[in-house]
Image (cartoon, rainbow, N blue to C red; front, side):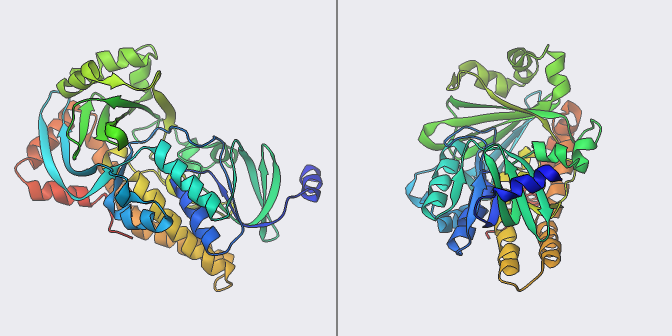
Length: 387
């Protein structure tokens, strides 16, 4: 505790709101906070612009919210995606309209644009800065980073799927033994290929699935999720795994054989968990993937991140205005998060169990193929309404 006391002497000016992580959720919260007049600081360990493992499809439920934040989406000529194709490992398939639809944009582009808006709104945006710890004491937070310490009245965690704070705080999902909801890896490419601009496809393979959809500049995001065991089976070689496992699906064989790869190396992340997470940890409000991760096959993680920032800001604003106390802020945010996302996550976990299995995915496709309205109903279970 003496080290903490020594550090507090040299604290930087106090902020109303500090945000750990500058992805979609963190940047959206920062913009809303700064516009409301709150002194806001955001810590991002990378430097914009940068690529991030992500499916890069955003449900249209987020369109108006993003435009309100300042993104000129209507002027950007982005691909509007309104059809879904699902294939099984042996090449069986089903195609369906997407009830609401979405659009494609890379994280490289959208995060960079939102970061610029945040700066223009007066957010103190500290790049190349890693948050090492957050300590709550006497109704205030002390945020310790790789570049110093600061103090804030409210802290939000928006650092993604799994971070050093999760391990430090021993969050429950980090202690769960490997099971069907965790221990995944994800791999992403940008490619050029021939693929309909209005179609997002999900191609199943043994113990995983791969999504492809168009983003800006006629490029495509190709991103897949699989188990760590699949990679180990292929001597931890991604190319071998793609050749020996993914390309058994004839649709994926065609994509990988003919695509122009735009990255020198694929982007990868590991230890992905879909186990349930808490929305409050040590009085820190968790938003985006830090609060809960929906299966990528649902195509809705980016919209959930954005929507969660809005829910968090509404409660933070009430707290800083003195209308509610900290306990009420935490309870009400948790309730709102569960109200909007609880059922989606359950539906995502259920659908996830059918994908990546040759038998189950074939059974599911055969069962639902004659019933397009039921397919639309399943899709709606993982999506929300415009917010």
